[in-house]
Image (cartoon, rainbow, N blue to C red; front, side, top):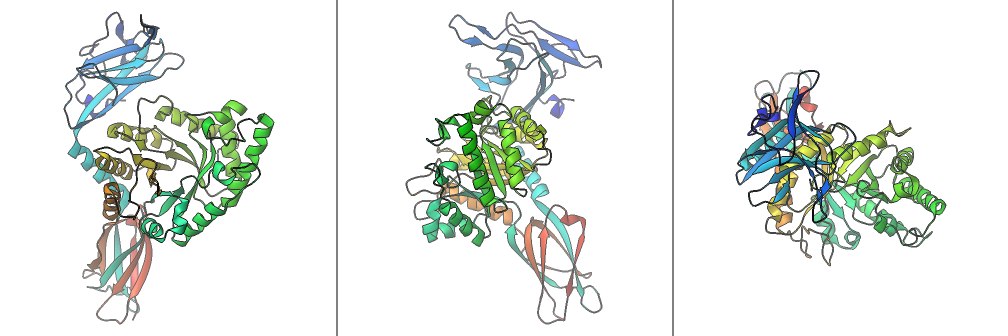
Length: 521
């Protein structure tokens, strides 16, 4: 494919003019080749990935190009990369003038952790001012999260248009799921309940549904707390994600699980899976099935590389309605973490999908989104890559570490997620605890918003913004641009007594049709 943005500020990004504009590191050989179709690409031969005099590994380097990068600017980098055989983790790297190496986030080049040839083509680096980037996110959000609908008010008996009819618009429930983590403290604190339920439409229980919470001692299951939390959520129309069936982290296994042999572990797993999934089947909208199994491999280490795929199969057999998520961290947050990069996420999800019997499973992409300093262009490119799976995609555990830019960074992350057309929902990982939160608290202990809580409220209000009333034209027509959600439209007219209430869901398909409201005398 052609370079994005015609290459942006990269010179000769397609290598049609040889290596003009490009350089190679000293003692590294580079050249340009042509494919059978005539496409040209750069090749740098694998002479790296050797030990230096200090004993550290020297990576394989590819071509590089010197560019001038500006402050307060986002840069979108893209390229086609290939190794001729086998596999290698190839990184894009920015080398700052003072020598600091920044994983793509001056001089740009590609390097590998293996002694391989690196093939490069269609390189692009495009700068965007922060205002340009934000404007695009807002346009995308408006196109994705809102629709223009046409309502027509007509009389009950003569079917004539009701000119000058008044339409009152009431949003009952926002269409985009936005939520937060919930803790057991909510059960006994009315102030916590009021604060939580007045804002969020979805929730994840922080720990209360996990295995170490429901069966701390072997064969002594206790679901009273998650049952009570689910009852509370249902009372307020809050949908719940099931978190989680299993956790692939060795260090997160209950103490009585760790010494088990293979047969004992298999029996304990079957008991846990059937117990928790059967109990909440049809009551939760999602399951995080094998949590963080790109970073960890406790079950694969015990039962082989298809262990996770088999667990998804069994969960899907019990709960036919919930979406089954692969929940992982650093896929969006850290381009330098090689374990969960989007390409590896796609490969793991493909493996799960291709396991016999899994073809019909409802699978989902879960992205934890625990940020320090967000790399917003990388976040968008990762979402673009994962969107090719064509699966429901959620940001499942959003938080930002404390710091002077915490509020700004949180708003950037939430706007980027909301504006991406393939993101179907977002959950904050900001569960309140009296003794302090995991990373980020939205409120103080009196449930008064902290600055990050204020930005969350600001965005919730912004994403719900809509006209409160409108007047029909001479043809009885009202056109409204509305955020997706469930609405009541109340119609009145001077010629009739009373009002007509019309319930309707506005979604992406709504603008394709005209909705008639009959005003009855």
